[in-house]
Length: 482
Image 1 (cartoon, rainbow, N blue to C red):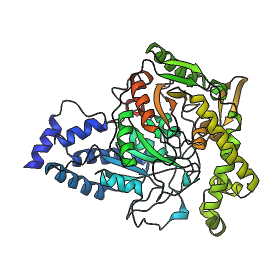
Image 2: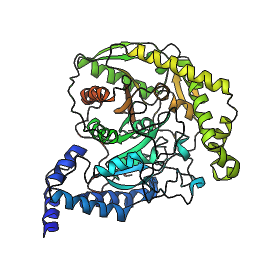
Image 3: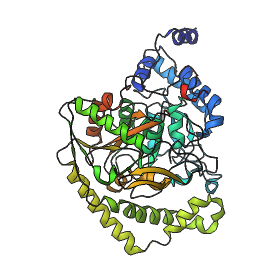
């Protein structure tokens, strides 16, 4: 009878929850059941994942059992917090006990995690339901999600395009309602790039804030872990759990906040629609009373060599044994990048580490007494699958830019420096492809960055009150139903 009453409540709701906080309130009040929410996510996976390929492993039976347990605990008065009974996905670099961690590579075939990573353990303790492990660019070493032993991932609004990477499967799972949040990794932008491409909020916390143990590394100096969500409020909740702390409450108002735009270099090579969307966002913020001025990061042109000499060397070192014993089990382009890392000289690596400190000081100086830096998150809309280059306008004309370079261009600095950064949707191209804005905060002050992002969200994302891509009724987003 209790199940019937809960089913009646589910059917009789006037409005679907749009955020994790809304969902948590409905679950706590027993207006919704975790089982019904999980079933809706699994329905979305059944209907759409055959085309989009967001998941490597779907944990249907385990998720339903976790959901039943969550419903029992909540009914008994044991509500654990805002993620209790909420379906989340994990990028398949993250260990979840009893589940394969494939890293989207044949190199990892046969592996099963013996225990939870700290990230998974904290989510489990919070009562989150694990819906599945998501597809990614092999070993997180790419930005398009095309190179995977389990097949490429497709953009939810246009299957001929990439959702971005390397956490592309995570982004697609959230954008389509297959999960309410996902945990990704970000070494050069791998949370923020797919979030921007798919119209989501993606948070890269400050370096070292969220534990990376039990997660397959790409670069120990640059790796970060963070959530992909539908709103800043959702990101705040998930971040609090990943940090092992209660989520804070936003306090800032937009008026009087100060932001700096590093226009030189960062805005010099942009798609025209991205540039227009970003400038419109700046205008809305100024109208809201935000003070915006321009700042300089003097050695921005050195970001790429600093980044590459660190990430290539550290990735090659981690993969040294399997590069010798199983080279044919890597996808060709990922193997090529790893082989390139073997030719990084020790002096080049040491020089890059010194460059990292220089860039960190320059970002600190640009932030100064401002509340954050503001720049686009992704220089181009979602790119076409199979393309090597994309045509982009620049201060010197129109150029054909390598896709990997252009997609990393605006994000990888903040992996090098470790500053927290968050991307928010800020509009769309005439074709309906999302555009993302990025806000960067002070070192080790991610809660302050979330305060700023919460205050700005309604102006950056005009429809923030009704986040996109939450088809709880089982219908696909309108843009994809053609």
